[in-house]
Image (spheres, each protein chain N blue to C red):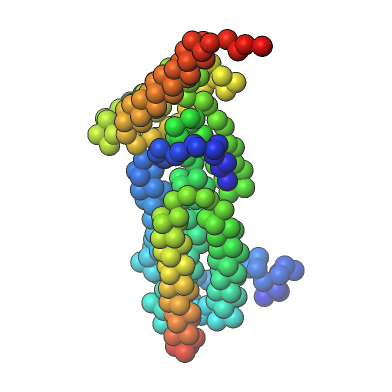
Length: 186
Length: 87
């Protein structure tokens, strides 16, 4: 999926905060309860009378409903969480932007082209849970990377800054070494 | 009373009478759910196998997905059998 350059090393991978998954689980839990709530209302107001073993029927229907929600959760986990990732290497930041199961965009930003990194943490919830938005601005072809709901945005910023400084330092050393080398004689 | 010239679906229905959910309908929904699970499993598995790193996490989630899905199908299968025997 991602082709690394020769000698390129993956330093870390950045994903959204786990609270994103908790939110999805809560949403699916509410959706799961809905039909049972309707059934309970139906029986309470004497609208629904079912023959046979009612708990077996509810288990069967509820189980099939749960299976669909189970699949839905894993589709979300795959498309909305796990594959939506920043891969930070010692040369670049790769942004794998997964939009659903069948649409993926991979963008690259070289570390030595990074001009500015902003971290934005808004609200009590984000402050308490330690998540936020990171915005990287670059002088390269892709001007900006934005990642919302990132866990530990300050730590990620620090890592990228450290790697970017190292990269710039290395390219400077190579340039100085090339400049100070004696001219080739014919 | 002259019957209305509409199919019975448009007739007033009584919600107070006891009814049995047809077992054939339950089995049809069960096999449809199992088919959806199988198709989605292939799609998800393809994505998980294509991803090059974090293999350990992917393996763990694959296990959870398949064990959970199979357990749900097993419980539903047995519940339908119990329900059909109770009619």
